[in-house]
Amino acid sequence: MITSYNKNIGTKHKALTINLDPAIYGTFAEIGAGQDVAAHFFKAGASSGTVAKTMSAYDMIFSDAIYGVQKVKRYVSEQRLIAMLEREYGLMIERLAEQRGSTSTFFAFSGTFSTLNYHKTNEGHGWMGVRFQLEPNGEYHEVVIHVKLIDNDANLQQQAVGILGVNLIYACFYYNETPSVFLMSLMDDLSKDRIQIDMVRFEGPRFAKVDNRLMSLHLVKYGFSDAALFGPDGKNMQPSEVLYKKHMVVIRGRFRPLINVHLDMLNTGVKQFMQEPDVDESKVVVVTELTLQALKERNADETADIDEKDFLDRVDILCSLGQTVLISNFHEYYKLVAYLSKITKLKVGVVLGYPNLEYIFSEEHYQNLPGGILESFATLFSRKVKLFVYPTLRDGLIWNCLKFTLPPHLIDLYRYLIANDKIEDIRHYNETNLHVQTDKVLELIKQGADGWEEYVPAEVATMIKERCLFGYPCEVPATNITDMGAENASLS
Image 1 (cartoon, one colour):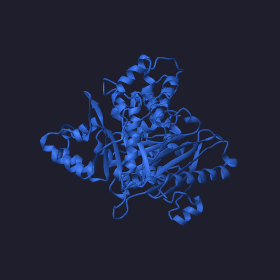
Image 2 (tube, helix red, strand yellow):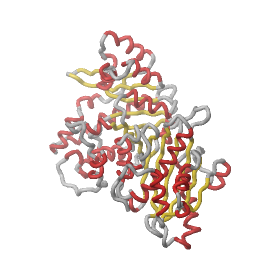
Image 3 (tube, rainbow, N blue to C red):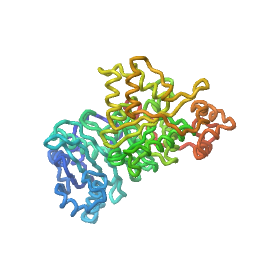
Image 4 (cartoon, helix red, strand yellow):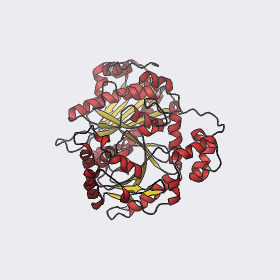
């Protein structure tokens, strides 16, 4: 077992190391992107010690005959990948366990990919995973990832898939005790402008203490992906599989903690979005978004690392309320909309507070863009997107879109957006919520003061008290969320 991480280990060396390990033995099943993963093991030498079988069922009829017809009709999908892993791993055990099960750690590698077509009208992406043993006759473990292929050439995309597959198999056997090292090693001999990994899932006894939500956070934190998604059950999800051809309502916040005003913003914003004439209510997905910047705001030093427990506390609260959570590196709203617009062509609603409307129209935030605020607005408002603005209370006055003040040179731009139904006030809000501020509620919680419970949903208040969240003064047993601190310090 390798305990230290050396990012300079080459792809050929990794493949050869596995080939020379007498215990590791398995199969390769690859659909799309050639068979570049298996090819690395053949070219490295001594492959007969590792490769039991390679195959590729490119034709859909063959694929269905071997792996079954899936509910999801797309052949590049997680369901197809899981069917491949179950079939191939099952065959390994069925055919070879009696002969060499006591001396081998079996594995099945599978991948299903779509690389660039001839006319380059699609986006390359795919799924790969490994089901593997860590001891002879032992239980299996499984790691699954989703990958976006960025190269503008199909051959280069195939090469990237081959390298990534070797990295994944190597990490499964040699970095399984250190999840952060495991993730970092996936990029060996690759770069972030060639691939993005936006979903990862660890399962099995060795990964019992791995919180896959933290793995989502680390994908974004390491820059492997701009965004990651997981559902109310806390399970990681691939964004395009959940949001494809869906309407979305997105609300961004720190949610530290989530208070009544957040819930009112969300409920009233969603209700108003549903009333839009071009929205199909059956296709609406509600997403609460946490940005990396929001997760760091509690630290005076913005370079400080993210508090992982604090992150999980916020996520637990959101999930307990049935929310789908997006973690992103999109500080600007136009970047968020650009990302979502690649997934769906249907209308997107963005629910935000009045102060964020002021932020969006502050030109200082677009100095890095050649076209300034107009360039950002071309991205933000050219899509099927609409902003729903929740009012705020200042000096006894309620501020909303009608009272929004701007420099003279931006007034006509704002009026154009209002006239074209791109920005709208949230109407039926609870005015009593406007007197409550998140930071003041947080301070009351830390002090253990009486009455703070009335400012948060009942479920949230119960969770804060039972688990002593956000500095609430009580005692709670320490929980192990996977010790990754020491590893991260050496990798960053």
